[in-house]
Length: 219
Ligand SMILES: CCCCC/C=C\C/C=C\C/C=C\C/C=C\CCCC(=O)SCCNC(=O)CCNC(=O)[C@H](O)C(C)(C)COP(=O)(O)OP(=O)(O)OC[C@H]1O[C@@H](n2cnc3c(N)ncnc32)[C@H](O)[C@@H]1OP(=O)(O)O
Image (cartoon, rainbow, N blue to C red; front, side):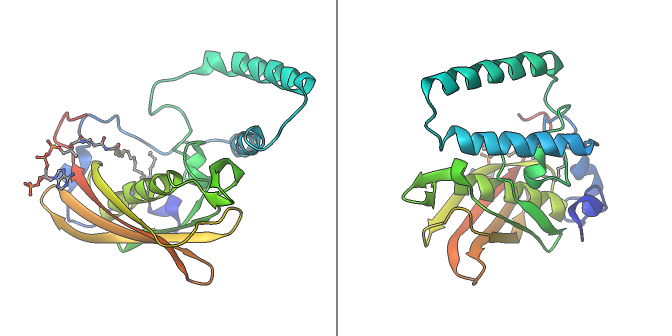
């Protein structure tokens, strides 16, 4: 089922509707409605991030670029909004839900049985010698786990631990797939695991985590 269709639907009864409404002290997040220009902006900014970490321009070009970026900052600054009101992270149809922080991956399965997402690590995510930075994998898994527990019907929880086994080098610019599901629920605790594979099915990394349901008002 598509991510957008699934979001907000009745989910498993593991948490119960009342619990599900309690997201600790979190603001209530809702999906954002945006026009195609938003995806265009995020896409351009992602390419800019790639270029920012992969180019060596002349001083004149650097100065020109700095001025243009400063002009962009001046353009956007008056539109700052509190957490939960920005489209970034809330546009379910965009890679990484339109958040520059998230990996630009696309969710292709989102239900109580699990979540699967597909995409690439890009030049922006380079660690060394052509491989993705080791710190970008926990980001991918942690966000996936947030979606998994959400799709399963668990209230917003925080990651208590996240254990990654790096099995093989994770390449850039190569389509990969990550998939995971809830293993068990014990009271406030949700145990989740996931695997990152290449197109041939080779396991690049696997990960398990504990997410703990927040108590009412908990940050
Ligand atoms: C966006 C809207 C658009 C639609 C979105 C669409 C889909 C959804 C997608 C995404 C979801 C949306 C949004 C997601 C939003 C937020 C997700 C936030 C995720 C994070 O932001 S992640 C940040 C990193 N994360 C932290 O910043 C945690 C810091 N930390 C703490 O906040 C506490 O530490 C806490 C709360 C974890 C626990 O604290 P606590 O006091 O409440 O509970 P306590 O310690 O009693 O633990 C209870 C039981 O867990 C066991 N336990 C605890 N820790 C353990 C460990 N490490 N190892 C083994 N067992 C452990 C205990 O042993 C006990 O077990 P038992 O009950 O059996 O004794």
